[in-house]
Length: 433
Image (cartoon, rainbow, N blue to C red):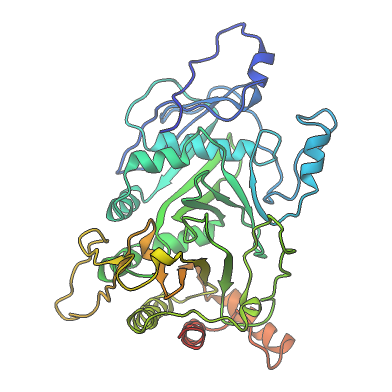
């Protein structure tokens, strides 16, 4: 569990003492499963916040959120800032990888609000009056059911996402303007989203839940929450929370983001021995193969067929298949060493009477995040479909026409949902044995 909340700051306390504090404090808040929760923080000097849940409006001017919308493009490097020369040297590190979002980082205040707001959204009592910002919980009951279906205890969810330890910033190779974060234990992935993407996700939510009930071992990323965050009277920001496909990450050696095309699908690899974490792309995967036992490959191809058909029906495209490699130790290899039938411990699906084989269950590895893990003879593979909110509307249709002229004879990501689904399935079929 995260550390308990410090008490309210005493009147007349030395503000310099506050500035020596690090991180964000946490108190208790209010959550209703039937309506959005508004959470208002009381900012204190130095970034220490006190929390609870309330539906009242703020009555005091809050501190202003750092204005830059881009994730990690810079950090504070003033000679008067914390860390001085050491902080400036840290800023010169490569921009791709995982970095702790500390007090000098431009996104520190935003992530503190996200942490403390999520803490409050999973609490059941009110300790202190709150001021400063509002955190909204969208479709709370649906996502509570999804978390419960995964066997995820609310206290564990709260401990990973709440205050106590800072989030990690993930600076990926995506061209989107979204910001990406990981919880400190790398179990949960947070991503900012545009309002229209959130609308699409919520519109598809009932069918998404139905698909997971019917196919409990689906490769679709497990969405765990959608939230809005408004500072004072500023514009709302939206972010989603999902279970990280790349978890546990400690032994992962390679990571890939696959779309089944070639345009803009190459990333310069990190130098050998570099600590920087890179997610590579399709062209980097050339010459590699996912080796699976016969039943595992058959299951994977069938599940890819089911999941991509579902996404085609939703009229979405531009999603990715995440792939990661983890070399198994000798004692983990073999058909009986790490695979057990875990039907009872897996997500419970509703068996369809007219589709007796619809669930497409498989043997799950005895490991955390088993739904996204397949074990081959020598490698463990992490697989999951992410970014499920891009609808093939007028803008994407025009983009398709432009790219057809711009890249004649080459494959690119913006194609019709049917073609996109078929192409990604064919990629998996060609790269597995």
